[in-house]
Amino acid sequence: MQVSVDTTSQIERRVKVQVPAAEIDEAVTARLKDAAKTVRMDGFRKGKVPMSVIRQRYGSEVRNEVVGEVMRERYVRAITDENLNPAGNPQIETDVNEAGKDLEFTATLEIYPEVELSSIEGTEVERPVVEVADADVAEMIETLRKQNASWEEVERAAEDGDQLTIDFQGYLGDEPFEGGSAEGHELVIGSGSFIPGFEEQLIGAKAGEDKELKVTFPEDYQAEQLAGQEATFKVKVHAVKAQALPEVDAEFVKQFGVEDGDLDRFREEIAKNMTREAEQAVDNRVKQQVLEALKKANDIPVPQALIQQETDGLKRQAAQQFGLGEDFDVSQLPDELFAEQAKSRVQIGLLLAEVIKVNELDASDDDIRAKVEELAQQYQEPEQVVEYYMGNDQMKNQVKSAVLEEKAVDVLLEQASVKDVEMSYQEALAAAQQQGGGDEEAEEEAEERQA
Image (cartoon, rainbow, N blue to C red; front, top):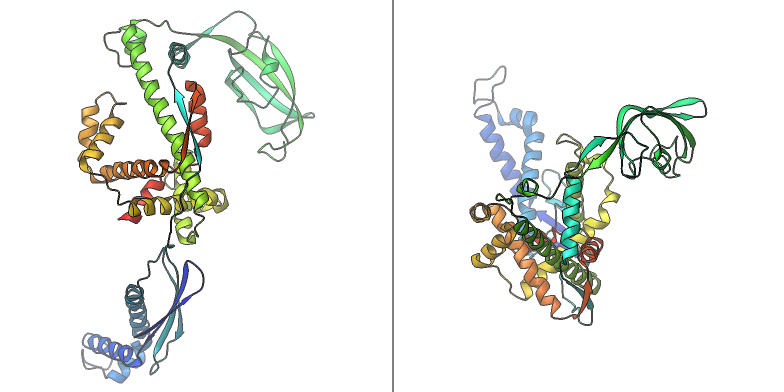
């Protein structure tokens, strides 16, 4: 077997392979002889069909099978001998495939890029300093009250925040339009669930009233026939309901796992959860700044095969998130919606893998258990969570990936200039959410590359 490798780009190789004709012909002949032992054909006894007839009838089919198997086997042998690390399946084209001639084929493949890490030294990283105040706890309790509120019918005009039960029909001119009607719809004024201007015009409405609302659909409205159009909605108000917030008493706090109904302990648990959430937000904001700096300092080429794999994964996540069902064909979602995020994830994954490799980072069972115990604190029965994670290799490997990522980020953080910035609880959460670039799975790529 003769092999030559052409470098067509930083991450693309063209491998040409030549296999002696004798090897192919011998393999074809051997397989035809095996087939002749069992072939049944009119006019011949079983196993007595002449080889010339067997070759005429089955020779082309058998040769195609042999050539396919040989190309796959010789491709693997070639990339192994040439120390190539493919980043996806190759494109294989046959150049010469004729009886009596050497088999020649070309495999075009992408390889993982060789990464020489550049330092992020000089990068300024903002690290939020957050303290959960009593006012934050009080605001969280108020949020919990609203989430558990009920609606009580009132005999007054509707106010912002009230829930109205309405029938409505939309018109363009004098003609009703499709999808513009409903009966018994429950609408919370101020929720922003209807087009701008609709909800505001219902403030002051009373049960039993008929209202006529004038609105203009946004220019970028999803239904093209309505975009930018002026419309009229005829609305019948059946009921006005006000939000009834529950009292913060023993019965209320029992809903949140405080079985004895102790209010002070309830506030302590909320403060503890908020503190943990704030710490996670701080870690996430710092991590994303570090990873962005790493990516900016190391603009490596990214194999398209890996980008496509990540794109397909993001499509499946999107389908699950929007409840499209297991049978939904994710190929209907356009690649361009996910390609940029997919490329970023792959790039960061490759770079993190190199950080882990260069610094010989590893995660022991003690490291993994400590991380699992930390994660388990948000559950009511943390001991069971720890037992489950530590007894499940797949879950354990996911935690190992997270631990390795944290260690890699810590190594990189030593190269940066860290500036502490005081933030409120809400500011820290908002900053972390805004900073997040969707690379939370990059560590799995890094772990796979390291392995």
